Length: 303
Image 1 (cartoon, helix red, strand yellow):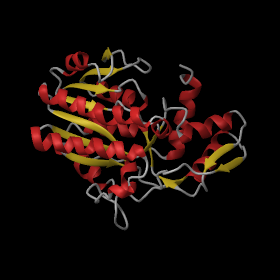
Image 2 (cartoon, one colour; image 1 turned 180 degrees about the vertical axis):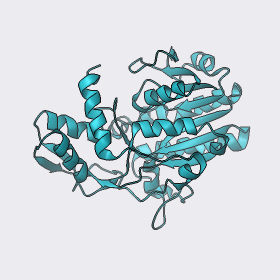
Image 3 (cartoon, rainbow, N blue to C red; image 1 turned 90 degrees about the vertical axis):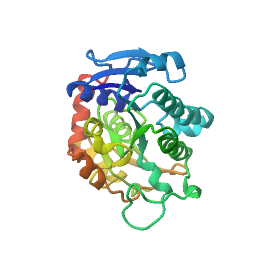
């Protein structure tokens, strides 16, 4: 299959490209830089706001994975106007190019942070109702807006979509700002591990290779016009992450600072639909994933 991946040189995108290539697909990457590349993929170095370059990259493609955008919530908070442009207008530009060029489907990278805006009790599913008054962080608002665009383009123009709501990702090539990377770096440098808030807040972390596998499986017809939560199976507290890093890297103190404004508190999210439609399940335990990250740091982390 001929596929395009925006943001395919980034943390998650580069792993998606690797897995798509390994599965035998013809992959073209659209990105602003060439940080993590695969010699068997083709690359267009531009961004989604260059209309002619975007059209050229998407022309003749069966599926477009749209992973480009602002994913660091601290950067979103620091530059909200730019975040809206990247995470909302950028989605609109990709969708419209896909519509005009008859690309079969657009696969959107979303996030489980959107469940913080849902209402109800107990485990949340993909159809949990959203209360816009609970959106909280601007990052959530941009992702909800992007998801709405996907539905509108389906209703108005027949453009097929798949929305993948990522659990909290970690693994090789992750940004230094992500919590696991920060904790590992602190432990390696013999510095205190800093936890924002009490440390009791829980997340379901997903190893990046497990996420990448789901993207390949999402090419199946069963994923068309579906929203799928790619959530980890086991909730882990931030304190438990710190303890795991201390065990694997070395004992260092832990200090607590005030929590971030409008942070994602975490809710129980079902990944049952992804299991049923894609036969996908996360398979990498947290400790094993951190071990693999440490191995990568020793080998390639300085690239």
